[in-house]
Image (cartoon, rainbow, N blue to C red; front, side, top):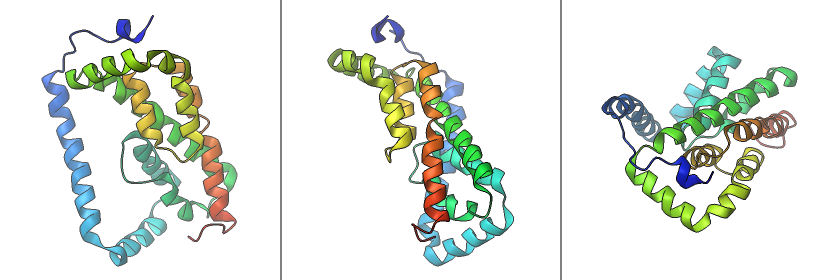
Length: 193
């Protein structure tokens, strides 16, 4: 079955889908504006509060959000605060949060296919690159999960292209390697925290 068979010919987007995304979009726009206005000194003050008041779970939620949505943030930002916990707890917990973020991003991509503009772009892309997408599509998820590439964007694109969910999910689990690299880079002092 090729992508043309998988993609709906008349995508429909429901009103509640549009209205439901408005608060999420406003929340992220507000967060971005807030970060721009806050400044470095204030940011360091609030980072100290987060470091002292929040726990591993809240850091994992942050990682899940950054790996679900395409944001100008990185999971790497919380690792200076996570080195206070043992590696055998941090690495699996953050890898799970990151993998769940990739899977969530994939599912968002599946919903984006219902937007007619995106659907048409996918059809045009598939006409040109279909054989490569079928052959190497999920490999991009594997590569972006380990190397510093935009993981959430690649997972979302995999969802839009309706690549194999099981493979995308399994390849997302390789984020454990990247989380281990982040942890030990900060733990060993290879990166200034």
